[in-house]
Structures are given as C-alpha cells and as structure tokens.
Image (cartoon, rainbow, N blue to C red; front, side):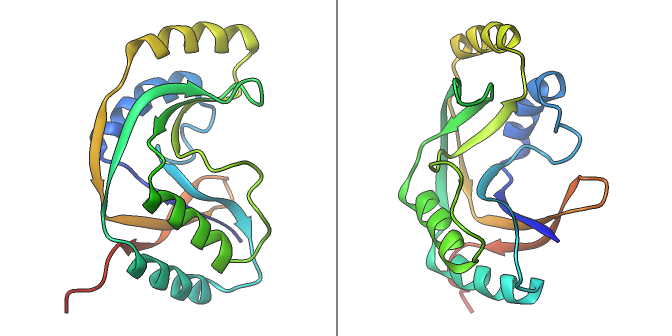
Length: 171
C-alpha cells in the first residue's frame, strides 16, 4: 500500500488553493490541498507500526503557527506553482523525523514546505499563470495542531488512515 504524511490546512486556505487547483492541477480530485511532510512511499511496515512511530513523533512537537507568505514555483525543475510556507523548525523536524523513523529511502528533493496550486503545466501556461499569481501576494497564518497518515486507494485518490495531534496528551 502507498502511504503519505501530510498536513491539511484550514478550510479557508483549502478553498483559496482549490480556486486555482481546479483549473491548474490535474490531481485536484485525488486529494485536498495539503502540505506534504513525507512524500508517497511504500514500506514493509504494517499500518499499526507506522501509526505507533507517528504517535511518538507527534508527542515531540507542540502546535505551531503556519505562515504562507508568497506564491512560488519549482521551475526549471518542474512547472509546479505553489503557496510557499515559512520553513520553521517544527516543519523541518516533522519532515526529518518521519524520514528517519519510517524507512523507504531519502526524499527525492530538498524539503520546501508548500501547498501546490498548479502542476504539470506547459511552459507557456506556467509562465502566464505564475506571472499573474505571484503579483497577487498572499498573507495567511493559522495554527497547525495535527498531521495525517494518508493512503492511496485503487482509483489513485488519497484518504486519511489516521490523524495525529501534536503535543503531549494533557491527561
């Protein structure tokens, strides 16, 4: 089974991202807007073992403030356009811990926390869309208090397997 680890932002940010994704992201119908902590992976671990490791990771981190401050692009590597999140210690720590605790190899790319709003665009389309979107500017802040283990269904869409709350249980 293919898994991933993601943060789903607030409905407000998801609605804003979806206003672009429905036009510019062919994965629009497969998964809601999200910030990827660990890219899609296959593992020999069963879901219970993954869940156990993620519960331990979640206890290490307190809820944190997510700041989205601009529209950016991965060009020339790919024609992907995204909302760029401030790369804070908590995000980097979650990313590093998930890769360290759940074996399946290293990340393909350096960690750049973001929410994709367009991908697989032609060069001309990327240039037009990115040119207009980056002038819009975006200022968004919200508290993040959880992350999710997701898995891929046969129709290639993704669904939540388990949700992990950040911080120690107050009980």
